[in-house]
Image 1 (tube, one colour):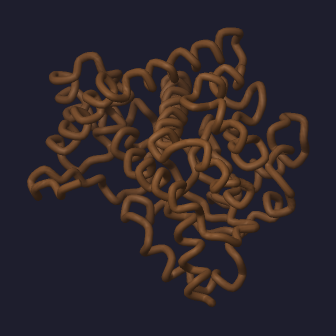
Image 2 (cartoon, rainbow, N blue to C red):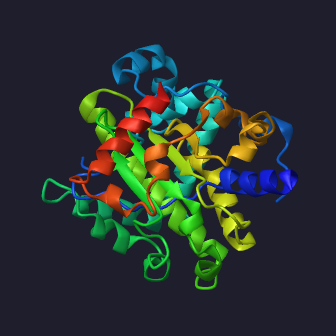
Image 3 (cartoon, helix red, strand yellow):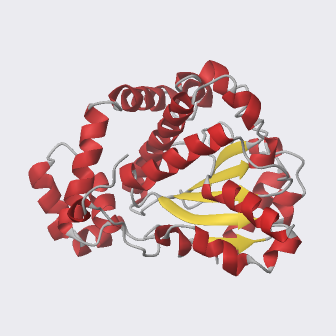
Length: 316
């Protein structure tokens, strides 16, 4: 029984859901194995989120400028994120080259759609989340299942994005009967791109490196995810740090069943080294007390303020 529970939770945790459902008007305001020599390894280091962009640029100036020599059109904040994520300049260069190829090739329409949607969402000085949701790939099918009940993106006071997920409220089997694994993956990448645009814009405006904090609520998880959904999530997770390095902040596993809390030492090693240092297992009573996430979408709801305060306490 314990082994089955560990397997169930590990499947959920290793495949974090990625979607874009804003928390309200002001929520997001402004193959074959490769040869060994070609492997790119992310540094297993703690997040640089919250650090001064100016200080990080000074400390990584040599690499950031070297990347500019080959990729002059890539924004400095993007080059900084790649410089922070890789242990050598050569690896950062190779990873950024792969990103540029993706963004100008197979991922171009997705990137362009996200940029246009962000522009429309911020056109009136606030945030029109519907513009972003409607522009998402295959949104007509997916948005029926990815809703404010199960996924929300909130704004912390410091500018970070808090990405709240309650996987137990997602009908992944019915969802995957409507879309293919490839289509689901395209949706996930679009969401990551929007998060990246928002985080970079906030970083430049505030001078503080902003990131995405993942709050995975395990409350109510009873069944193993649909294998098609798991495949789409796994492929998406692999792409996340490859295309958006230094964007992911702490990954919080919230409200783990009591029977599994004694097995945290067995669960943690299942995560990649780059995630383990940012991993936090915590109880979040405010979140656990909600039947669904919808109340968090209102800026006037007390539970929203209480939850954001709870997240800040848990991160200390």
